[in-house]
Image 1: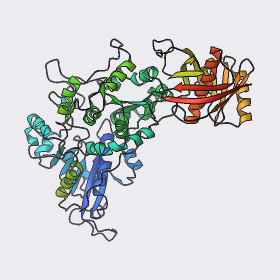
Image 2: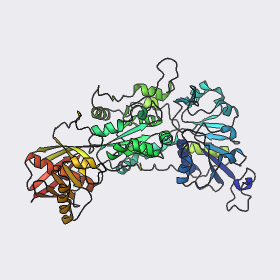
Image 3: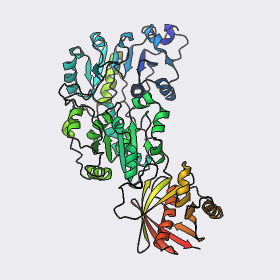
Image 4: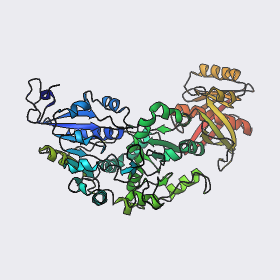
Length: 574
């Protein structure tokens, strides 16, 4: 391929095939999912500048690099230059990457190395042997070339790295953290992000796991399921963010198979491409580990519980996974721990206590050692890039892009263990736990008691649950006559059920095993969680069953309490 087409410095823009005569070429080098995602964000710093052209390439040497090319193509990068051509002499004026592990010897220009996390707080394997290295620090040989510019978020990091390798002197630049600036600027959008998660008045519990055996997911891979099984579905929303390396190493199909029960229980599974930023802003509690998201949450004032903390190196050799003396190490020593053994209370009790007792400034002394130039990081990063290109930056300030909505994989739970309590006058309280992960024989019980029954929707993928359900529902609204016919047929097909209720749009029609029929009309269809029609149909079916067991199934108003919602309905018994 001709160098004229790619644009060697000095010949850029001279090809008669070019429509725009550009002045500089920027090489963007991806290696892992995390690094590719960071590079895609960098494009905003150059928007509208016709002096520049961009080449994307992938250094395919990472064990966590599967799918990077597809990720770039999905983001609209249709021209990806093979790495062999980069090493073979393709022209460019500046290289930008977000991984210190790319083959920097093959890069002929200055390389700006963006951080792919926050700080330099992890010791990671250096190959397949026992050796480790500080994640984020380029190799000594690359530093000695003088062609590396390593970006830092705080001056303290420079002191830390110089102690590890003095060759970093003069090649580290403190710009602050653009990701943190975007998060801070997006705090006023918290309610928008909560709506995107359909949180309503529920507490959003975000689980965040870095990669590795000592991570949250490595230590407690069942935690998302346990939380769904112990936190009432109408009072809490559980979201899970897994490090992109987990997805890349194990594959999407494997991860989704592992979490299939949790997804059926209503888990919001965030994609590896992003969504964690908006979810962090929406969260009422972050359950994390030694990953960067925990540090960002602490800096934002989010309540934190640690489910894992990596290896702090307390055994005396200083070779723990978490680098001693870093802000992350200090945070891990003082942040409250989540007890998963039950020795110090239920998961729900710990969640509620942490949220209620949190001081948002609790970790400020630690997090101020992480982020310098707050509010200026994006400008400083753009200035650095243009300085290395030998160009004057555009006069307009760089755009601070709105964080994308979570975009999680989610579908509402369609099978619930319901604890129903009837109280005069005509008040029903429902506490619901998704059956795929709830243990009905376990110790979890609502504080007000109530009789338990199983409510299952006709669209539930587990046919075995339909066979043992006490209440069957049809969540898709049907015309009145069709709803009536479906409820009768449902009882015929599933003799174990005592109530079958089909949604009608404004309520439901239900058939009872004793031959009676009940029409329920909601006077305020706000639902309780998930899609209002879906939830309302299941809630109304459970309400009928509760009234039936209590001996109070008759015409008249009933008030339903579910989560933070109060739903007034009118019952007519035929």
